[in-house]
Length: 156
Image (cartoon, rainbow, N blue to C red):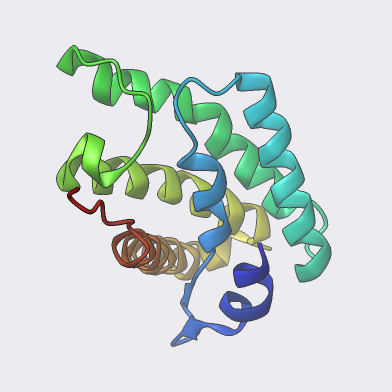
């Protein structure tokens, strides 16, 4: 949260790509987490960002939608492989599956956020460009954070 509020708030590329890295905190939680707890965490996370961004519930609504759809995406994407996944990580899913899962949820979050923010239908193309650019930017930043913060196991 502090990273989002203090650093990522000012990180914008070409007035189109915004980085909302806070969403990783709720979408990358273990799959066995209680759904009610996930929804409460998603709402609390969104409200905290809303307070600092002065957006009156837009982040809370978008985060709730992403958290609500998360179990469905997990079921659709990973249940067919026959493995019972307990965590969402690069190591357990593989890089391709991890990136596709992460990008889909970030895309859902950003679509909800920017369509809520859109003031009139004349801004549809601008909004779609912001959704795509921001989703790619956020996914890359989350992926880089995951890759560089990975704990290396030492052999004993």
